[in-house]
Image 1 (cartoon, rainbow, N blue to C red):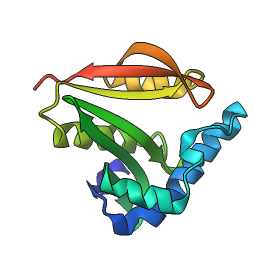
Image 2: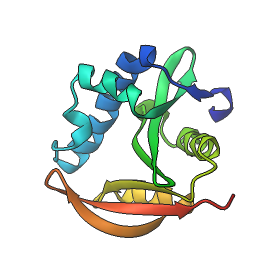
Image 3: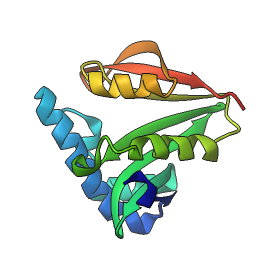
Image 4: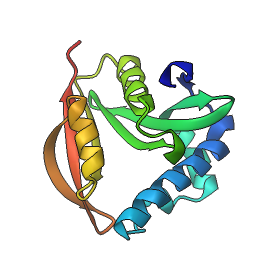
Length: 155
């Protein structure tokens, strides 16, 4: 399945579809942990559309539908990755691995990559560790404990 997925840069014109995907994906995680305080669930569609002025977004498409997304920005030679979402019907098919791989290649001049996930998100932790990310530290964001993970760029 992952072979028929097209990954490309997203544009502001994609913002409403990506916003809907983000809400669907993060609501599922929020329901799993009974915690709806995630910042990704607090954005308005207008605020989300404006984030395209600051962040680079990638999208994964299948059959003309956006089924995956990830965003990043570079600060002090660190690629900060966030808002990673795969449609629940398409998870565990290699799409997330491909999105992160394309993102890392796109930002190949940074020293390292950084992302975070909820402290209870064991599935996410396993996935990121499998891709070479290691736990760097723990913080509290929006009254939620999160783990930051980093990966050094080998380029």
